[in-house]
Image (cartoon, rainbow, N blue to C red; front, side, top):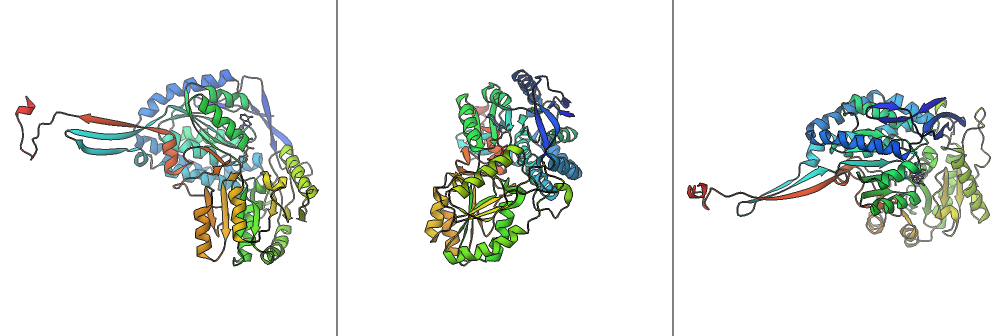
Length: 499
Ligand code: NAD
């Protein structure tokens, strides 16, 4: 069986801790590889080498670092299919979806080609007599990225791009559930010209994560994952004086106003609710139709669309709508929550329970579910399910609908479908959620804007990618300088001042 180790000092190395985690093929349920789980000693050695490598990399001029990013873009394009295939095999998402995962990461690397522009600082001439003032952005040194299973290409690239192009060295600790693609990305970085040791991929679990959090060398931690771990990482990183940005889970609401185009809204809900088996932090998991008539018509349009969804392995072709979920444990958790919805009185309008796919009976497939008449006290409303389960909460008015989203503990993304500009504008202004779509169900900002949630979906300051990505992985130094002036006021040369 394949053993996946770490990427240290420019090469793949086997783990030495003797601890491993299983890596599944979610479509078949088989263990297809084992990934090494780093010990603290392995991590510390990777960090020490990264600190050494960072010195020269941080001193390299920004344009040269940008050229590495430029080369990396072309290599990601060259290997797109290969990366997507490895990604689908470990994650389970469809092939087009896996390509999208690589593509959205690649776009951040494209943005990072602009590193010299992002880093060039500010200058004030003659801030006082003979005084100039300038600010520069310097790399932090060694930084870390800790990433989740659901975007094993995109999120590591979101971390690596700004961190590396700013002159840092990075310890990347990817998810142990799909570690192949991050290792392949490290190989591509080397091919693109990144010096050895500047990017270290350390696979592992809590032991490696805690080692990162307690390290005195690592200066910043960028985390993406579930909310309890995000909060834990934020607190423990801060306790040792690190900069931390920790993005967590979500429960994204889509409000459907009575004037909305309901066909468009239903199509959007099916894509945003069930795409990638609902394993997206920007998935819509709650539909909030306003008014009974809107709700009835929406459900009528949703049911046939959901029943038509094609669930299958990524090898079954590009018309598969979604694949299996990532592990048997994830599947069991979804099934438990679906049952709680039934037990707590929600109406299961599309029942995906007992779904099985011929030839893939041991795969982690979950049929699509649609709940109606969900209420805010139910577990399926309060909890992030992270599966192909859409809950409908009927609201009597716009105020009641926006009130639901305002008071939910998560604040990652949200959307409103309406033809009314006033309502849309009011929603965008009042909502306490980081990313908002108006007739757009998954409002993921492009690479040159920034990505981040509010409330329990994001701890710390500054968002991911865009200008914030560079701000997070650099710090500002401001220099005030005064030189004796040889020029008299009025422009006449003062020779005496030169003596
Ligand atoms: P997770 O929290 O289980 O794991 C994320 C990372 O934390 C992994 O690298 C994992 O090894 C590590 N980890 C797990 N348990 C740990 C522990 N006890 N101590 C220390 N480290 C630990 O998340 P996941 O299941 O991989 O990813 C899915 C979650 O990520 C969902 O909640 C999803 O909403 C969220 N997510 C959020 C965003 C965002 O931008 N807000 C984006 C993608 C995913």
